[in-house]
Structure formats: C-alpha cells, structure tokens
Length: 125
Length: 511
Image (cartoon, rainbow over all chains, first blue to last red; front, side, top):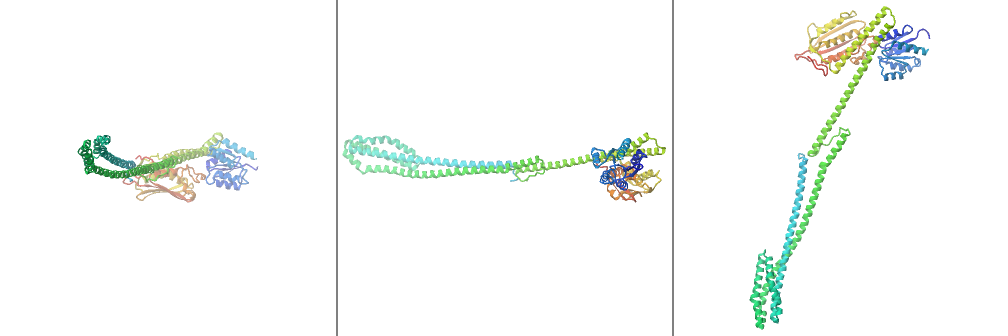
C-alpha cells in the first residue's frame, strides 16, 4: 500500500462531509462527491480504498451507487460504509442486501466511524 | 289496477270468489227444492189415482153385492155390499180431501159422492127391500136400464178423474226427471266454477305475492352477502311495488354508504400515510443537522484545534442548530396549514409598504447582492394576514439571496392591474433545472441545493404556497438553469366588499 489510503466521501451535506474528514484526520486522503453521479465518476477514474456513502442522494441514490460498484470487477472488493439517516430495519436489510460492509446511522458516534474505517482498511490489507 | 293496493285487490277477489260460490249453492238448493216439490206433486197424483181406484172398486162391490143378493136371494151375497157401504164414506172423504186443491176434481168427487149416495138410497136399498118380498120384481129392477145408467155415470166421473190424474202423474214425473237433471247440472257447474275460481285465486295470490316475496328474499340474501349493487325490477302492484321500491332505495343507500365508507377509509389511509411520511421525513431531516451539531461538538470537546478552526466548527454548529430551529418552526407551520387549523388574521394591508419594509430588512447587511426595488409609492390595499404575507415575501427574498451565491441583482416588483396585486422577486442565480421545476413546491424537495452547499429545510415554498392559496391567491415562477429565477405571487385586491381573502381550507376566518 503506497502512502495514506484514499477514502471517497459521498454525502450531499457539506458540513457532514467535513465532519467525517476532520474526524478521520490527516492519515487519509479524501475525495468528495456530492451526489451519486459524481461518486460514480470518481470511482471510475480512480478506485478508492474505502467509500463512505450516504443513501439519500440527489440523482442516483446511494443504493444504486453501491449496486453499480458490486457489479464492477475493479470496485467489487472496495469496502463501503453506508452512513444514513434512514435506519428502519427494512432500510438496513436493503443496504446489507446491496452489499454494504458496514452501516452507520446518523447521528453517528465519532469513535464508531474511526473504528469501522480502520478495521475495514486493516482487514483489506 | 296499479292504483289499487294489494290488500284491496285480494279482498275484492275473495269477495268475488265467495259470491260466485254462494250463487252456485243457492242455484243448487233452489233446484233441489223444485225437485222436491215436483216429486211430492207426482206422489200426490199417484195418491189421487189410488184413492179413485179404491172408490171404483167399492162401487163395483156395491153393485156386485146388490146384484148377487137379488139373483141368489142368499143373504151371504149381500156381504160385499155391506162392507163396501161401511168403507165408502171413508174412501169418499179421502178422495175429496185429496182433490181439494183442484176445483174440477172437487166437483167431480162431490158428484161421485152424490151419485153413490143416490144409488144407495134411491136404488140399492129399495131393490134389497123388494128382493125380500118380491124377488122377481127385484130381478126385473136390476135388469132395467136405470141401474146400469147410475153405475155408468159414477164410473164415468171416476174415469175422468183417473184419466186426468194419470196424465198429470206422467207430466209430473217427466218434469221431476228434467228438474233432477237440471239440479245435477247446476250443482256440477257451480262446483266446477267454484273450484276453478278458487284455483285461479290461489294462482293469482302466488303470482302477485309469493313470487315477488321470493325475489325480494333472494335479493336481500345477495345484499347480506355484500352485493350492494342488487336492484329489483320495480314493477308490481300496490304494496309489492312499494316494497321493491323501498328495497331499491335501501340498497342504493347502502351502496352509497359503502362507497362513502370506502372513500373515507381511503382518505384516512392517505392522511395516515401522509402523516407517517411526514414523521419519517422529519426524523430524516433532523438527523443530518443533528449529526453535524453533535459531531463537531464532540470534536471540539475531545481534541485541540487552532483558534481559526475552532471558530469555523462553532460557526457550523451555529448554522446547523439554526437550521434545526428553522425546521422545528416550519414543521409546525406545515402541520397547522395542512390541517387547516392556521387562522389568518385578515386585515387591510398596504402591500407596497409591506414589500418595501421586508426588502430593506433583508438587504440592510447585504454587500454581494444589489436590490432593485420597483414598487409604486401609492398605497395598494389587500385583505391579508400581514405577518403571513410578510413570511412569504421573506421566503422569496431569502431564496433569491441563497440561490445566487455569487451575488448579483435582485429585482423586487409590485404591480397592480386593478383586480389583483402581483409581487415578484427575480434573481440572477443558479436557476432551477427543468427536470426539477415540477417538484419545487413539494415539501422537503430541495433539488440540487444541498450539493451546492445551500442550507434550507425544503419547506419554505410549500408553506408559502399554502399561505398564498389560503388568501385566494396564486404563486408561481419562471426559471432557467444558470440564468436565475423569478418567483411571483398574486393576491386579490381588497374590494368594496370587505375581504376576498379566503382562509386555508377548513380554517376559520378571524377578522
């Protein structure tokens, strides 16, 4: 693994993207996406080491992005953490079925975010 | 027939049947009585004949007795005479009583009685007496024409009675036979007619009462099974027609009630769904700013940041907390407006003054945006809730500023055509993509604003539309992506009649 891992932060709320980036700190390199379309474009240009993905996105939803990734040879194994305000059992089931590696409900604990990100990257290495 | 009730019809038919049966019986009884009378008259004729024959025999005995005694001079031969003489008064009386009703015969019977009496006293007794003293003279006496003439006269009278009565007896027997046939025929016809009428009556009752009742019963079972579209053919006499009509009215009412209930149920379900959607939407909308507030507060508490970063995070917390407060206020507005519970305090409002006031308030501290105010100086009065219309203007002004992040000109116009006042706010901002324009007044719809970093709840325009429409006005916009948007709303002018403003659906007007 060369240098710090790259994380794609996909959320339509600017303060939340910043919160996730500040929380995870300077050990990672971040790429922003404000909607599903941008996320897919970023994923296509350079596969990241991990994706933080919101579900309610303008245009393509987070679930559609996730399904596209799982159907793509190069992106199939990239770990995805879904961070969403939707948190009914059905929502969680849909997210799990679509192939998410972890689920964080908004508002999330900062420690939970750092823990799940480092664990998934560790496992991948 | 239709205007007669069924009860009347059945009663009338029963009366007719009873009358026909009664007439048949009366005819049969009358015929039987006739027959009896005729039979008794026939019997009477036979009695008369018998009595006449008895009288004839007695006359023969009288004559034979006299003749025998005179010729034999033996007193024993006088026995028939004595017996007949003893029996005669009774036989003669009997005959006279029998023919009492017939003048001719009474006369004849009377004549016979006189002739016999005269024969006994003027002829027979003298001859018997003479026979005791001068037998030859007596013999000569019985041989002479006088005796034969007397007996022949008696026989002739009796013969006439016999002939007449025999003829009468034959006639009466014939009449009795014909009466007998008539009686049997009348009885048969009466019985047949009565039976046929009773059958017809029964069939008619079955057709006009039993069958319709069965039809109604079957239909009622259908209705009970839940088929409220069941309808009956309303033809039918009197009460049956009324029953079918009432049945149809009942099923129509049930059908209507059923549909009403289904519709109401559907409305309730939709309302429940809307409420449930609103609640999950609120939950979702609250979580995003709440995540930032909690997250940055946590960061500031756990870690040390340089002062400028600290300040930046505190600003984010402030913005997001305000967003939460704004959400809370908007939710309440949406809820009140949707339930129609929000009351508009309608009063005359000077629209240009209100617009000017709001615009100046908003642009007092704006450097990036330039305000262009095109509002007439004279007063234009609308009947409106001042605070709520101010809220709409503020929302449009706030949107114009928010959605033109690079600054630019904001044109605020007020124009009145004598019937309505039109207020518009035009910006030179990001505009609305054509694909999103249809949803711009939907609750929580924010288009691509969040990704552009523009804050908001997605409720402002939904609330604005409800307020404007609640005043009897209209709201709309024109927009081109990248060129800016113009939002406008129209309110009816206050007319001589106090107010044309309408409160939101179901709301009570308090002015």
